[in-house]
Length: 416
Image 1 (tube, rainbow, N blue to C red):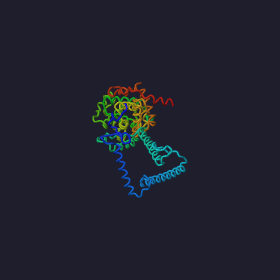
Image 2 (tube, rainbow, N blue to C red):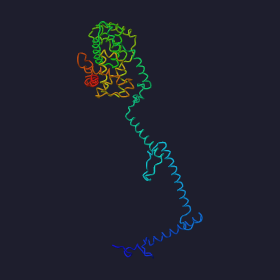
Image 3 (spheres, rainbow, N blue to C red):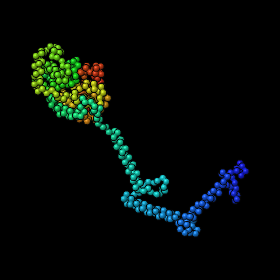
Image 4 (cartoon, rainbow, N blue to C red):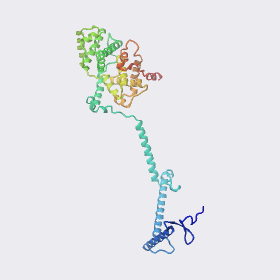
């Protein structure tokens, strides 16, 4: 429908016949006219202040001056930019690296300092991202003593000094790996039978683990210095356990108990005489580090749980029976037992930076000993010497003996 003045009262015709919009009874065109006049008056006043107005010039001289200054400034910037580009070309030999702003002319290059700054920022962000990714995947050494800060028995302040001293002292607890050649009436098999039996006695008496490891250490150190006839070998084992109990236990078995478990093979006087001989031969040196002290520290470094503890002690007690393991120092034997236990429990090689730091042994340094341990693990339930297997095949030790051996460690050797 055609809109006319009759049906749209908001439209009115002016004197020239043009339509004008009416709002609130006032003409919009009229207001605009007044505003234009007011603006012309302002411009006239500015002209009178700024100087003589040229005829036919509708622009204020200040506006002309500003435009002239802006053109002059643009020319200077253009000249500087061209000189700067020529310097860049002389330096780089190319125009590469210049970007284009989206709201500028496509042919107008971006100043070099802006492009260089963006490049540096991008490169810095890229380098920081690489460093962050390296930090994520790079394994760090854990402070295993942080949780014991309030435990005075943990002696966090000097525990590292203690183990540094243990490492020095373990050299004095080592015995020759071929000392059996000096024994005329003994051999390796007899030693294995004795220790396997003592492990059962230790278990029956419910003694501390430290006692067992010290007992074996006393036997080897004594036999390395003193020749013994075959029928006195069991007596040496009983006396070594008696001395270890006096050093480690709160409640010590009495001599009558030792006579009873030996089926009265030895008298009280024989036990006391052997005790005196052993102490004099060892020069009363009882406080030497055994694999047990290192086991406790290394298991803590491995953040061990109960299952790993049980498997680790199962494997190292298998090593106590074997004469060939005397060629390894106690610290290495303990580290290899923990490493092998981890491989057996998790089915893959696992040796963290924390374990390597606290044991001072890498996984490669432990491989030889670890492969021997796997061999003993495979035959633990075979033959006559099964005392360790039967001990750890009980609910008290979580049936640790049933854990599958880490056969892949031995298979790698066969493949090579």
